[in-house]
Image (cartoon, rainbow, N blue to C red; front, side, top):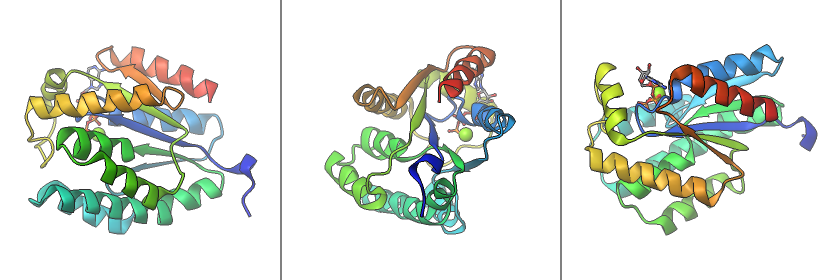
Length: 206
Ligand SMILES: Nc1ncnc2c1ncn2[C@@H]1O[C@H](COP(=O)(O)OP(=O)(O)OP(=O)(O)O)[C@@H](O)[C@H]1O
Ligand SMILES: [Mg+2]
C-alpha cells in the first residue's frame, strides 16, 4: 500500500516547439537529485517502449485528427501504467517533457479538436491524476521558430505554420489561466540563466 505522504510528485514541462523545455528539464532533474530526491525524467508522446513506438508514428505518419488523438492517449495510458504510476507510488518524483496539456494545446487549440472528446479521453486514461506542477514555457511562435531553425530537422508537428503555433500557444495560456495553482507560466524569452533561476525558486517551494 502506498501512503499519501510517501507518494512522489509529478512535474510537467509544456510549451510550443523550441520554447526551451528540454533545455531546462535537465537542470530541474539535476537540482532535485542534488537535494536527495529520486527523480525520473521522461517524455511524451513516449516514455515506455510501446509509447515510444507510437511516438515514432505520431511524428512521421500522416493521419487524421481522430487517429492522432487516440494514439496520443493510447501512448499516455501505457506510459502511465508502466512508468509514471509505479514511480510515483514508489515515492519517486516524475519530471515529464509534455503531458496532457500538450494534447489540449496541439490537438485541441492547434488542430481544432473537440474539447469534449479530449476531456472524456483525459478522464478515461488518467482518472483523476493531474500533475502537481506544470511549467508552461511561453514564447511567441516566431521566436520559437527561430530557435528551432538552428536546431534539428522538423517533424510532422514542427512543419506547421506560425498561425498553428499561435493557436497552440493561446490554448496553453487558456489552460494555465484556468488552473493557476498547478501552472507556473515562464516567460521563455528571458535569458536561459533567468529562466533557470525562476524554476529553481519554484522547486524550493515544492
Ligand atoms: N531562454 C532561452 N534563450 C535563448 N535560447 C534558448 C532559450 N531556451 C532555449 N534556447 C535554445 O532554443 C532551442 C530550443 O530549445 P529546446 O530544445 O529546449 O526547446 P523545446 O521546448 O524542448 O523544443 P521541442 O518541443 O521542439 O523539443 C535550443 O537551441 C536552446 O538552446
Ligand atoms: Mg524538447
